Image 1 (cartoon, rainbow, N blue to C red):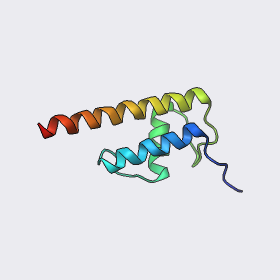
Image 2: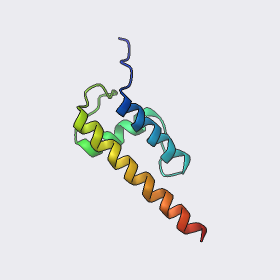
Image 3: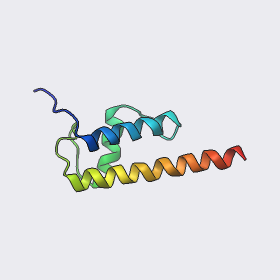
Length: 81
């Protein structure tokens, strides 16, 4: 079956995940790494896809990724001092 295109929120999740990987905070930058993170955050088995996610779940995951990225950036800034 063809994959469904990512929603704007799912694209944001992917972008944040890649930014975290670029900063060394994420070891597995592939989709299965993001799916494992989403499963831990939501308690729902992703089954290899983001298609099952509701908007509230997407929003919650995006906000958690934003917070994580902000912490990583802050730690990097303090490390340079």
